[in-house]
Structures are given as structure tokens and as C-alpha cells.
Amino acid sequence: MDRSQSARVLLGASILYVIAFYFIGASVKPGYSQVSNFVSEYNATGTAWASALTYAGFAGTSAMFAWFLVVAAPITQVSGVSRLGYWLLWSIPFSYFVGAVAPCDAGCPFEGSTSQDLHNDFSVLAYFGMGLGIALVSLAAGFRMFKLRRTFLLLTGFAFPLVFSLMIQPDVAPWRGLLQRSLDAAMAVSLVLMAITIFAKGQQSSRDVA
Image (cartoon, rainbow, N blue to C red; front, top):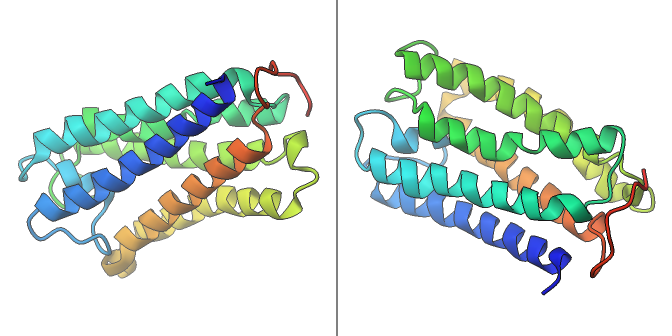
């Protein structure tokens, strides 16, 4: 299996890992709702299954996406601002790493313990980093012939800070989980589009093409 195939397999495995994490977490967490609860509430301090979901969920997901980014780096055809965008994609494993090392308090309030405050601050960096990263990768030369794909990535990139700002508003609390998962889904689709558009084929080495 060449590096391109390995990267695609790792990406698929990472996405499946997240899906399993979300559904298993929701099934074992008393009173948890995919529609109204943040992902961070899976391992909120002092709640049921917090330790298990920290290590098997957040830490495991962070490791999977980090592994994918390392394997994909040499065959992802980016340069200039799109290369910067690729490195900003490290915000993805970082976002799950934040959930592991700085879990939120129960309910993920705006203010709380030191861990909650760190969680809030780092989450802002992670979401804005993911949005900017996806938008900048869309400027890679490989997307020039695929305008719909580029448009999807650009819209997803712009949506990240906007939806993040919306989902923390008290008025949308009943729907904040759904909003967060819509970003997760858009991110997954964006990564798949990158994999089929700007990953070098076979043993071809990475070249600056943008």
C-alpha cells in the first residue's frame, strides 16, 4: 500500500472512529442528547464515564487525526497559503486534545474552573484555526478544476467561526449539539474532498503546484 492509499485509509478510519465515539458516548452517557449537548460534555468533570471517554474518545480521536496528517503531509499538493492552511488543519487533533487535557465542567458553562476557562480559550483557537485552515487549503492549485469542491471548502471555512459564535448563544442552547455536529460533518466532507483532489497519486512525491 503506497502513502496515498495509506493516508486515505487513515482518514476513513479516523472519521469512523469519531462516529463510533459519538454514538457510543451518547449511548452510555445518562441524559445525553446529540441535538442539545456539546461534544465536550461527554467527559465533563465529575460525570459518568468521563475518564473512559477522555482516553478512548478524545485522546484516541486526537491521535488518529494526528497520524493521518503526518502520513498525508508529504503527498498533499499544497504551497504558499494553501500549505499554511494544511498546517492549520492540526487544529483538528488539537481540538480533541483540548477535550482530553482540559475537560469542561458539567454543562460546559462560559465561566467555571480553571480547566473550563482553558477549555473555552483553546476551543476558540481550535475552531478559528480549523475554519481558516480549510478555507486556505481550498486555494491549492488542484482545486482550480473543481469549482464546486473549492466552493464547498470555502463555505465550510467561513462557516466555522460563524456557527461557533452562534452555537454558544443561550437562545440556541436546545440546538447547539446539532450545530456542532453539522460542523463536524462539513469538516469530514472537506477532508475527503482534499484526499480525492490534492493527494499525489501512487509513489509520486509531493510537489509545489499552487
